[in-house]
Length: 93
Image (cartoon, rainbow, N blue to C red; front, side):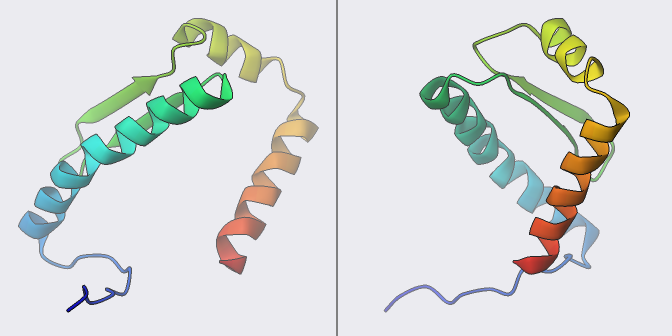
């Protein structure tokens, strides 16, 4: 028998939410590192746990200050355009 496909929605149980975050955090950090290496990209991933603790992942290509400086050099129009494309992507999935 195969696994049952779960509908992705917010977990109402706060302890269950923390457990799920703890279990999935390492997987997403691993995937982010792999993407950074395979595609040779600058990467910063910042996540806050349900309890408010931050987790940060920095790719292997550039240090965090260089990546932030690169982002800061974008014009507000470029950032807005990217933001709108992310929003469009999220709502069409």
